[in-house]
Amino acid sequence: MGLFDKFTKTLDKFSKTFDKFGYDEDGYDEDGYDKKGYNRNGFNKKGYDKKGYDKKGYKDGYDENGYNYKGYDEDGYNKNGFNNKGYNKDGYDNRGFSFDGIHMDTKINFDKDGYNKKGYNKDGFNKDGFNKNGYNKDGYNKNGFNKDGYDLDGYNKNGFNKDGFNKDGYDENGYDSNGYDENGYDSNGYNKDGYDRLGYNHLGYNKEGYNKDGFNKFNKNKIESNRMGK
Image 1: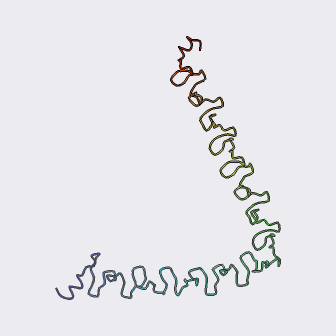
Image 2 (image 1 turned 90 degrees about the horizontal axis):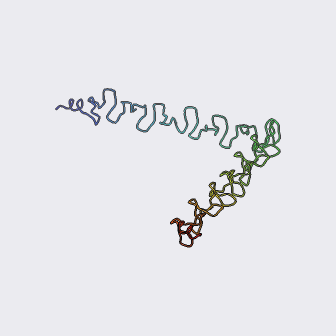
Image 3 (image 1 turned 30 degrees about the vertical axis):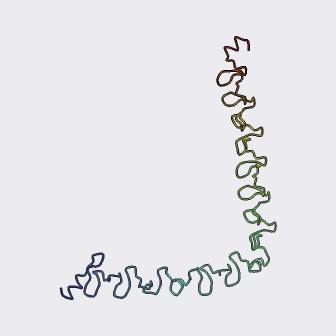
């Protein structure tokens, strides 16, 4: 096989045919670059396009609009005209306040709407009606809870009042103030009359005085008890 044939018949790992100069039918070499050194996406081996921009669109640290990775131009201002401290070239923030808190229009510490640099009025509340601690005039935050964690109805985020009971009158374990659940049984499983769900007291007898085996405290069943009058 001649040298010419060797180059024209060479196949790469994708089974493409390259000419004697090492380029495929689309004009790219086996590494994916054209004669000028750019790949199909328009970038050279160093990762720059023909204009000198990298894959993220930056040239010497700035994009086509003149902003760096953090969004600031050479003078340190973003597209809205503010530096990383939040002030424009005239020294005012986006609400018109200077670094010292003086408003450019009113020349005082409050803007035309009555709010200062930090966004609070003379009473200490912002436009949403909350103070710096997050509470409104009535003492409740945006979620409707006061500083103690209770809402207007007196319940916390878990639905319990200061005494530990929910709106239905049960605590977190499901018992009311008298210690009974919604079915009327205490933590030991007995109702107000002292009987469990099967109808037996703590001694194991039902209301008629018989245990689960059908015997009373005298060890007599119902037939024997009726016969003896007990």
